[in-house]
Image (tube, rainbow, N blue to C red; front, top):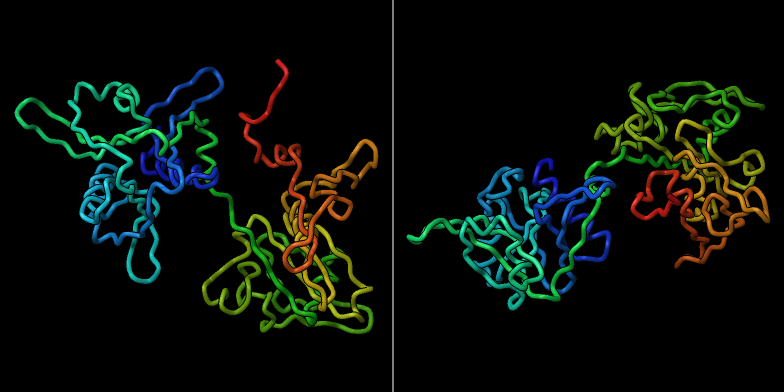
Length: 361
């Protein structure tokens, strides 16, 4: 079933994306012929408080130690006036040391029981009329055999789902980062050569000190240009990013955003230049529109223009890959926004899980 701390993170992240407060695995897995599924409990909003708890208060220094994390989280909860606690197995450091994400269950939502080891082979909580359960990983022997601590949730606090294992894995198998390069009007020489395919901006390309031959003169991109790195390691995002060692060669997709003045606008175009790179170009007096921006990024992901049977290419009113002919709405700055990708493009991107697709047998 894989590392258990990873399973807890996946369950929590799935829960957050699906309208729940948190989630945790029930330690069961099955396969009914369409791939492995993993039982998952999901905690509704309003039944817990959230805290970043310092690692030092847990006293557990390896997040992979699931039993230790669960014991420490529940000890912390009881010591701070709560009934129970579920760590989400995420950690961070905001400048004051490592903290662990922790959900503290509010009073009145759980019962506690010591369960004999022999009974843990069954789904104890559900079989005894509760909605869900999770172990505290505390154990004891009061003279009649080994018992394990179990927190039992009342009905109404949680939901249950069998979730495809490969869908859960999507929440931990992250894709490569996306790079965004914001360029000044004085950088337009780069764009002109990219459009005319005289310059390669594929991953790892170094643009430093390249000379661009244009009508009316020659342009030199110097090392002070924010879009150019001080070493041949790929494009980076400005001086602060350069100092941090940020590289666009690590990015699966890159967007070069250009603002140009009224004199230059008739010389420029916009669109995908291949290799996961796109270049939107706007007047310097105009805000980038989410609809346009998302459409061009769709090209960076490998999508082509969508079509409709009635209107032909670029005619699907419900898909971002028909952009300026698609239905949209104004955002809070009055810019065009929406729509998203239609189902067929979500599937093309691998973002529509097979469990949501009906196929004729």
